[in-house]
Length: 170
Image 1 (cartoon, rainbow, N blue to C red):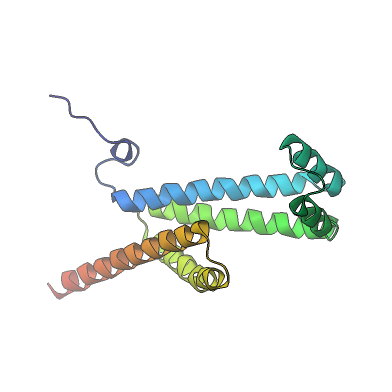
Image 2 (cartoon, rainbow, N blue to C red; image 1 turned 135 degrees about the horizontal axis):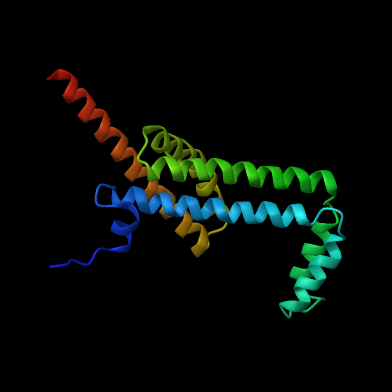
């Protein structure tokens, strides 16, 4: 009799930790997003950013006189070629690190777990500060997800350390 396998089982196989696989998929999607952001910013080089913003605002049917559009246009005037290059390099760098996290978690490598644990922990104070500054559903959701990821990875890492310690005693 043929049993139905879940999507996670099909892509990871039965030997994978489902939650690590889920976190890995999240990290890989995160990496794709930041690669796309880097490409988008890189494509803005040598273009009039204000014209690009106005075009996007028109396509999205925003009022060109709205506070949001005026605010974005004011901030866009601060951007120049070297600044855009730096922003795109940071996006590419972050995407690369996130891709490494995802690959390490997918293959259940200890370095991937430690890397994800360290990076997730490093963002938690900033996320808490942002929620204290202004509470939104998106910020609260991201903080909740990152805390759950951190706690789960911490549990995995501590569990593996205990298993190694008990194996060495035998």
